[in-house]
Structures are given as C-alpha cells and as structure tokens.
Length: 105
Image (cartoon, rainbow, N blue to C red):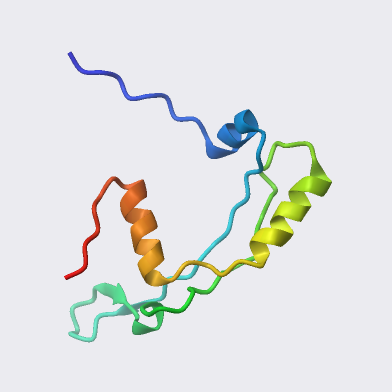
C-alpha cells in the first residue's frame, strides 16, 4: 500500500500560517547555444563564478496575504539589500529542493 503524497500547500499559504511574509525574487541564469553546433542550451560562462547572480526584478510582495503592509514593505526593503545567490549557492538550493545531493568533483 502506497502512502498518498501530501496535498500541495502554496508557500504564500504556508507563510500566512506561520505569520511571516511571502516575498518573491527572480534571478538570471544566462544560457547560450552550445558552441559545438548541436542546437542545445548550455550555461553561459557569465553565469558561473563566485559572484552573485543578477536579480531580474525588484523583490515582490504582491502575493503576501499578511495584511500588515508596513511590516511587509520593510521585509521587502531588507531582502532587496541582500545579494542574490551565486551559481554554486543556487545549485545547492536546487539540489535541496529537488531532493538531490550535490558534490564537487
């Protein structure tokens, strides 16, 4: 007998249940056409390195159900002061979210 997967609860609802804020940000990971002429996408070297990846937009709080706009806007301002993750940090975030283990060769 298999155990049913837990029902999906949107992160904004999870934030509301926890009394915190749901804020979103976008990060750019540049891709390029493979130089081996195979019409495949590969990571552009501009996305690889120790520096923070570029954010694509301002931090967004439009989906935050908190009903505390001053507190929510203050959280947005704090998050906008932080650097976006580097490529390596993003890789670890994705690995964790997708239940993978990332190791370095």
